[in-house]
Image (cartoon, rainbow, N blue to C red; front, side, top):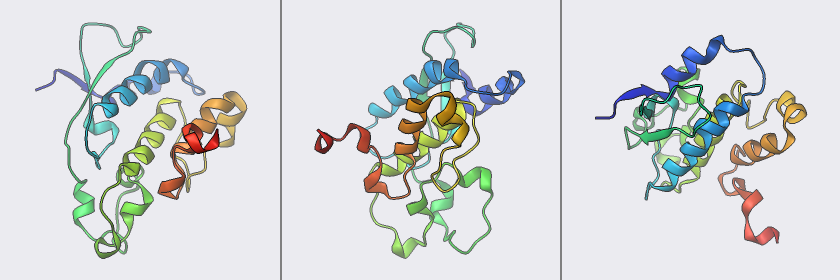
Length: 173
């Protein structure tokens, strides 16, 4: 059992803050999320703010220190056990699911880990203070406010799984 709130709950209470780039949330939760994901030896496949617990160490949410995040609910998203390609699925549920997982079950291959990269990109975009990427496109306003952050998130959200994470690829020199 992990004491504390989910990232989704924390983001809801944070909605009272002014709109715009939220570097504070990226610093506090984004880095911790990357660290938590790096500790998982297999694809999570259900990564969303509701499956991320913020371990409460008594530090206030506004403190600049990095949070300790714990990933919960490992295993395929319940939607992935259904054939969702032709079904009606709530947008807020599917926004974190990689596009390649939203095809029918027969067409899905084995998990690669790139699914979690896509989910990470959507969560980082939300932490940055922006709505979901539409078709993998990051809102232009993010590029105007923080071009490097926009470029990194865009790299995580590429529609093609093998094109994700190319910014850090050794092939690029």
